[in-house]
Amino acid sequence: HTHTHTRSQPAMSQQIRGELDQLLQLPGNTTCADCKRPDPDWASVNLGIFLCIECSGIHRNLGAHVSKVKSVRLDQWALPQLQQMREIGNIEAAKKWEKHVPVTYKRPTTEDDAVLREQWIRAKYEREEFAEGEKGKIARDLYLSGQKEGFLSKKGKDNNRWAKRYVILKPDCIEYFIHEKDVPNNPKDRLPLASTTITVCATRINRPYALQFTHNRRNYFFAADDGHDLVDWINAIRAAQARMLGLDGATPDQEAKILAQIDRGFAMEGWLTKQGPKEKGWKKRFFFLQDDTLLYFKFPTDAVCLGFIQIGKRDQGFSVEENTKPPVGLCFTLTTPARAYSLQADQKESVQRWINAINSAIEFAKDGQVEIQDED
Image 1 (tube, rainbow, N blue to C red):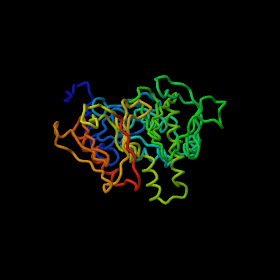
Image 2: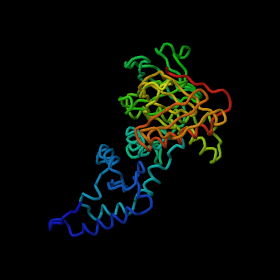
Image 3: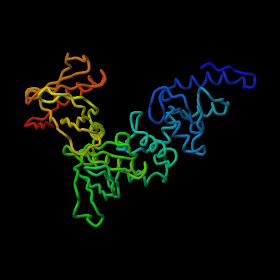
Image 4: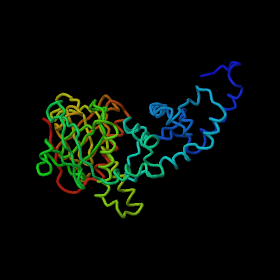
């Protein structure tokens, strides 16, 4: 965009714009202060940080008493505002606002759900949970406790109805109860933390503040009432998972491994079209690769999978490769001891990502019997 500078604009603006551009090149300022997206072109003047357009929108919702948002490109800047950006900047601001982020806290990136980014920003600047001082200590202790209980809404197994359930996070599992009077002896189900994948799935299930727990080839969908409670649940679960993996007293190397493990989510997920076993028609299915098991569902919001393929080692007869069937570049074949699966993706780049993810599962597969169950 070319801006024509009329006489009414201060003569400073060219010089200020040049200086702002220089500040954006400095280490720390080349990515958004909150989600690390490259090339931020917005700023919070009073906080002295550079932001991407999405995070700037969240800052604007905090109110000007917490964060005063300006566009680097489109707004007029005054010298004192420039001076503030020069004195602070993203690195210095993080030393203040992120000083005490608990090691297990999920720091969202651009890839993460907007709810997580919003709560991260509110936790930092509005609730001051990670800055020096007493204000944030209670919240931090809660995040690290690995304990939480309360009501969440749960989606019915076979329908779209949501009902309140009482949920308790224990050191090694999550239990939920139909009625509060069933606590503590009659849980409806127990989901062991070691074998449950927990993901935020608000966009997929079209309900804000929703979580998906995938365990034993089944999806359980729960939803919190608000973003703050959702993030409290996520971080309490992460702390419990990390403890279970030996976080207390871990060396920095062990700690990094533990954090990678609780971060892992699904290796891959998305729609693929699969061919039936007798080369009869193609069916569109939603696939999740959960550690060593490929689960497929009619819809991603279904509780029970149609079928699954537990992935074994190469010497057991497992392999995956792109194939030359038309449409070329979109098809790949997963070969198992039982049969070969022809799979087709919507985009070339997702074919490569599926192949890499499945190859990695083959590489790290455990020894022993593998189970495969077909839908037809």
